[in-house]
Amino acid sequence: MNTLYKNIHQEIIDQCKEGSQKAQFQLYKLYYKAMYSVCIRIVNNDMEAEDVMQEAFLSAFKKMDTYKGEVSFGAWLKKIVVNRSLDCLKKRKVQFEEVNERTVQISDYQMGTKEVDVQMIKNAIQDLPDGYRVVLSLYLIEGYDHDEISQILGISNSSSRTQLLRAKNKLKMILKDKEVFSYN
Image (cartoon, rainbow, N blue to C red):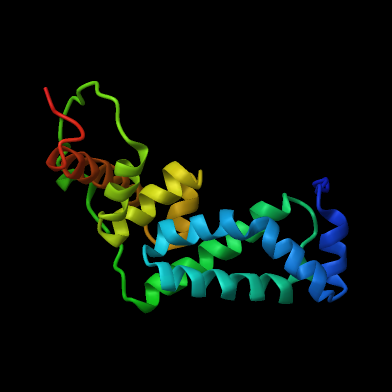
């Protein structure tokens, strides 16, 4: 049995379902920053992220009648934003590796303790290759599990796990090169 999710912005959502442009603009203002952050983490380009986000909102407004309140509106919108962002990457022909788990090499680094500037870590994540950055962002930041990531990206569960591992190792190397972390 599905229970409906109580939205704090339900009145605005209902007005959007009725086609109110004023309500659409209000909803846009409420969710713009959060959804832009999702876009930029995935597409890694300001202009493309802006375009993707605009397309995602337009799509959401067209599909408002399909929102049934089974999850929060923000979660429903975020799924649309993630899918549009991934469509953008597919247009760029970003490849997600399919790998055999037996061929994976695991780096065994110990991170030294040091205070770190969060912006340096964000910048380092943006320096990752697209495939690694997307899997890392979907897993660590957006909260998807490997089954969901494999379904979203059309890769195997083990490939999702492997790309995450490789992304973490590559991120460590980038941070080491920037002398953010040292290895023991």
